[in-house]
Amino acid sequence: MYFFTIESFNIPGASPLKVRQVEATRQVTGGGDLVWLEIVNDEADVPLSVQGTPFTLPLGSATPFAPPPPSRYVGLTVSRTGAPGPVYRSGYLNTLPVPSSPEDTTVAVDVFEARWQLVTAQQINNSISPLLPMTLKGNIKITDASVKIEEGHITLRAEGTKPEALLGLIGFKYAVNLRVVPETEMDFAGSQNVLRFLPFGATIELTSSGPSIPETQVILKLIEGVVAATVTPQVRSSLESAATAAVYAAVGAFTGRTGGVGTIPPSVTLTTERAQVGTFRPNPSDPETFGVHLLLAAGTFGSVINALYPARPGGSGSGCMPAALVRLAALISRQPYQRGKGH
Image (cartoon, rainbow, N blue to C red):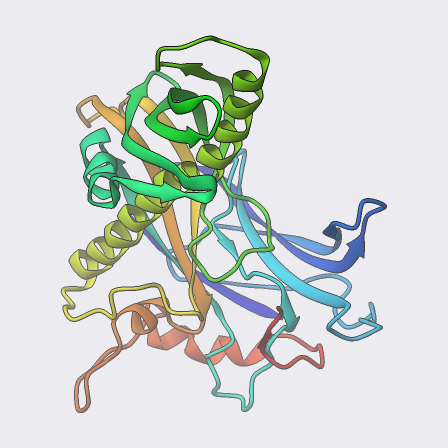
C-alpha cells in the first residue's frame, strides 16, 4: 500500500485523483533516434483528502520488472480527473522506494499545489534582454528578441544578421507563435521540464537590401532553424524560472519558512497541471489578469516542504504530513524496490 498527501490552496478539481504506475523501455527507431516506449502497468483512484490517503495498486508485486535498468525503468504519476497536466510525476526511476522501517515516511508521495501563478510578458522579456546580442551557430547574430502575449498563445519575434561571402550581410526578421501546454512526459532531465511549446505560424523574411535570389531563401531557412532551436528554449527557461520562484514563494507563504534552497532539488519534481495564456480569472472571486497563467505543483517522496526549505539545525520542520498519519506510511508498497533515478 502507498500513502499520498497533498497541500493545496483549495484548488477546484474533480476527485478522485488518478494514480498510474508506468513502465518504460528505451527503443531505437529506424532513423536512429532514442525514444521511450511507455505502458501503464497499474493504476488506482485516490480520493482527495485533507488528511492524506492510503491507496493500493491492484497488481502490487505481481508484475516483474525484467530486464533491469538501464534498459527498463518505472515511474509514478498522479493526475486530477480532466486536467491536461499531472499533479505529480516521479520521472523515470530505476526502482520505486520501499520503507526501511515501519516508521519510515520518506517513501510517501507528498505534493504541494500552489495557487495560480501569473507570468507577464515583461518578466519574460526582462530575462531575455540581458542575453542580447547573442551570436549563434553559423555566425548568426540575434540583435533583438522579445515576446508578446496574445489570447491563447505567445508570439516570439527575433531580428538579426548573418554574413555571407557572396550575398553580404543578410538581415532577417523571425516570428513564431507558441501555444503553452503542460509537460506530461515522464522523461525529463532534472525537475525543470514543466512546459511544452507547440509552434505554429512561423515566418522569416529578408530585411536587408539586395537581390532576393534562391540562395538567400535557403539561407533564411537555415537561419530559422538555428534561431528557433536557440531562442525558443530561452523563453521556456524564463517561464520555468518564474515557476520555480513562484513555488518557493507559495510554500514560504504557506508555512512561514524562509531560506529555501532556491532551485528545485533533484529529489523534487515541479509540474504544470494547467496553463492558460491571455486573459484569465482563476476563481470567481479573483480579478481578470493578462499573461501566462500556470497552476503548479511540486512533489517528492517524503516531505516536499522539507526538501524545498530544509529545517535548520535545532529547528522544527515537519513536512505536509500530519503526525497522526505518519504511521500509515509504513504500509507503503510490497514491491522489492529501492529508490534510484534513471538516466
